[in-house]
Amino acid sequence: MTGAEALPRRQTISFVIPCYKSEGSVKLVMDEIREAVAQKPRYDYQIIAVNDCSPDDLLSVIRQEAELDPRVIAVDLAKNGGRHNALMCGCHYATGDYVVFCDDDQQCPVDRLWDLLAPLVNDEASGGGYDVSIARYPKKTQSAWKNFGSKVNDVVATWLLNKDPELKFSNFSAMKSFVKDEVVRYTNPYPYLSGLMLSSTKRVCNVDMEERERTIGTGNYSFKKSVSLWMNSFTSFSVKPLRLATICGFVLALLGLIFAVYVIVRKIMLPFVAVGYSSLMAALLFIGGMIMLMLGLIGEYIGRIYISINNSPQFVVRAVYRQQPEEATK
Image (tube, rainbow, N blue to C red; front, side, top):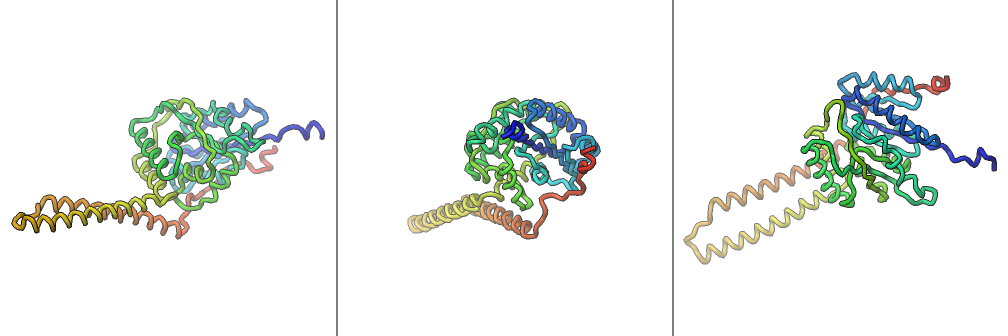
């Protein structure tokens, strides 16, 4: 065996960046990625920047980066589908041995890249190590509303996806290529990336690090997007909500039977005492509200099934900007 043959193969890290209203920060994120990867020469990088139909001049920024750097791919989506749809789009273009997800606002500590990848790289040759690594922030810099939304999302994921309560999700994460290959097999229009990763492997870990303060722009994660994410986690990977509806229906029916027996016995024992109007109306309103809630939940499932059967796309790509092979060799 020659010395050249004994050298380890150069591995590639694919960075997927969902971009929205970040014309002032996305280039800084790309520069930081280049600096981080340059620390270890045996690794190369690929950057997939997905423009999620941003209203600013973001497209021209990432397009220029793609024209200057053959390792950058700029994807322009035809409509805004949300962060997880943009990440799914980027995964289809990722060809690296590892795929790293990070935000476009410089809040993800890209300078801690090798700490994030360490659990995936260590003991890989022996089949050990982890398949997915997720940054965990002991102290978050986001608003109280977003902290509340993250907490609710964590509780929902723990219940629905059987997630370890100690495992925390964040926007800065990495996974091996085989997990990415499994993730992109999901074609329904309501992707929930955290659920897809947990469905693909149980070797998932957290790496503690500090989240950065936002220095440019403002957050774009609205109440509507938070509700949409919760619904995706509810309906895409579990039927537990439907089972909960069945349990609630059984409990209410049992309570109704007990109340009916109580009314009959009371009427026999005290024939001249009228049943209270207020308590009766309260029971009717409560039971009616529960029925409507359960019907709405079932309707949400049916609606999503209908949309999935119609093959609605996860994302629609308007254009892809990248250097052609002959351009990259010039």
